[in-house]
Image (cartoon, rainbow, N blue to C red; front, side, top):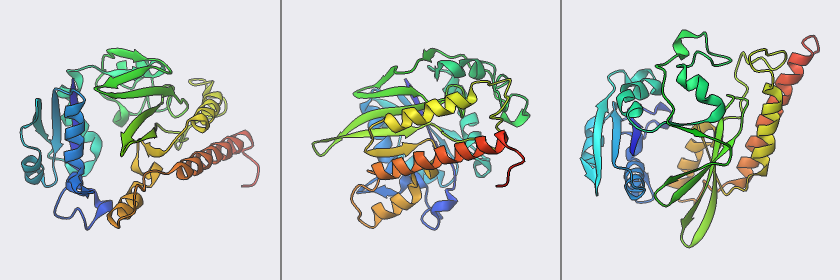
Length: 277
C-alpha cells in the first residue's frame, strides 16, 4: 500500500507563518504535521509514502528523509505548485494509478470514465482526467482498515452521486474520540436541483445526506476542505495553547445546519424562480 502526501503549495492563508517554510513543517504540540503523518502512515503498515514537493522543498526533504522505519519515502516535484493542488495530484498520477483505488459505488462510473459521466462537469474540459480503474467498489457502511485504524464509509450523496463521509474512532490519553470527516454537503454553483434529467434523485439524495450527517456521533470535526471545520482558526488557537480545539461537536452541528439551510434556500429559489429573495 502506498500513500501520497501533497506538500507543494504555499499555503498563503497561513502567512506569514509559511513565508519561509512549508505548512506541513509547522508544529502541532512539539511535532510537525509532517512528522505526525509519516509516523501514522508507517504505523498503519503503509509500504511507501510519496511526497509531492514545491514550496520550500529542500526543507521538506531534510525533515522527511528517505524512510520512516520500514516505510520508504519518495519524492515527486511539481514545478507549477503555485497554480493549484490538483496539479500536484497530477504529478503523482503514476503512483496514484499503481495501487488500489477505492471509490463509493455510485461514483465508480464517473471515475472510470475520467469524469465524462459526471452529471455536472462531464462536458467541462478542465474537469476531466485520465480514466481510472477502480480496484474496490465501496458500499454504504463498508470498512477500510489501515493498520489499527478502521474507517467507515457513509454514503452522503448529492454533491456527487457517491459522495462519501468517513467516520473513525481514535484514542488519545486514555480516551476514545469519535471522528467525522465530511465529504461535501454543498450545492455547487450551477447545480440543477429541479428537473435534473442527469440526476433526477438529487434532491432526495441531499435530504438523505443531511439525515445521515445529523445521525453521526461526533467529537472531532474534520472535512474534505479546511474551511468546513474552520481549520485555520483552530490551528491558531492550538498555537495559543488552547487544548484540543478540534474537539468541536457544536461546530459540527452548526455547520450541518448551515449547509442544510443553504440547500433548502437553493431548492426554494429553483422551485419558485419568480419569488422575491
